[in-house]
Image (cartoon, rainbow, N blue to C red; front, top):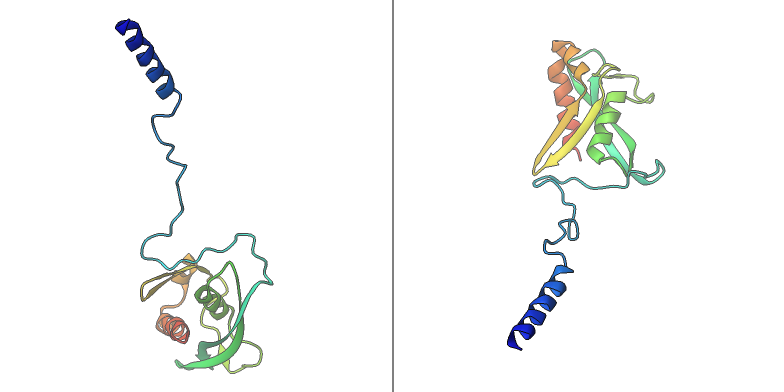
Length: 153
């Protein structure tokens, strides 16, 4: 009698525990996180161009043919799927507006901004490979223009 009761108890125990998963599902409580140490903001990949903000920006360009920088104030539209820094660098690559005929663009039309990444107090700006083909005499002024523009934020 004890053996049959023990066998029934063991059978019930095996049947009841056999129905539940023994290993927890790793995707059940999975969450997405940002890369540690970055201030990346996640935006919708289907954000419209009309959505975003407009900022008053100060951009620095070459003054005439001199090795000097002069500023241009401009309203910059920043879409929701782009950072302010990337929008500023892209506007710098486009050159000065028509209202500033004394200013000259520093980067050729082949140079484009790939990305900007903020990590702590440091901003990493990645430009296209064609920046390496730019004249070396302009390189110092180009980097000054980038840093002056981004420090105005």
